[in-house]
Length: 407
Image (cartoon, rainbow, N blue to C red; front, top):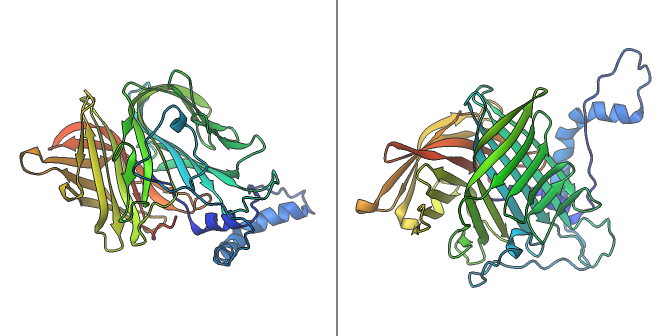
């Protein structure tokens, strides 16, 4: 749903950013005199716990800026225009393209998948003509959710835009980070090529329904102030075909996906610690989106939900007509964060009231992105019930459960 950025990224925005790739290497007994670079790589796991707090402290220092960039604000009166809005919007601070879905294997076993590309503008001097100036950062997350494994398998990358290594086109959806890419074709299909560490996704996403503009014609309010909002549209019910490769073997898959594209400059209310969000493709062809922005006490600061029927009619639910109720929690054995992986969402009132229940494909779908955006969050495939009956499948995202999210 939203970009998950940490103070470390704010440090990158104000200082020259250089990518460092750390790998583990096995030293054989014959290597009696390892190189200085190899020694550094061996020491990095011990040094990182000391370096990260130092970097975060530096992030709080004032940065001299000759000409800091002025970012655009989200305004409710600005209409969405396509095909331009399929591309990136570098005049805004943050942007993300987010695809989640369910896949079926040849053995008819379910897999969940997530592919997210983030673009983040920095506070670097806007007047600096150098091609090396880190004006934009590109970050990507990828994950597979397999009940047979029982935990999320994921990977992440980060680099500054430029030099043919990372980009986010302004013309259409065309985001790339090294060998990872997601590109929209002229016929509306999306092609995803993503060779991660332990799996490779090669997928084609084909639209079957029109765009779903969220909020007020694509203006999605997230806080008390009008500027605390994003421009936001979705593409539900994308037909997925392609392959997933793991452990040296490739298999053909098919399924259904949901795509979100959002961009903003100021999203969070200062009192917000995180959010809960769900996007669900329902079996009758309808689509459900719901979110709440949470306070430190766990209360909702802002909520919204939208239900679009198969024939395109959209029902928007007001803040007062939405209620999130945790049903069951799961505690991560790695981070100690406790997530309400079973959730009930009530929308509407009276005879129009609907009760949505979310059940995870499996509990451990926590994604630790501290090597890129710095956040730890739960992002998982869920089955959806409507008034107690099976209704569809989707993805559920929960942030701010380990610590307050900072954008």
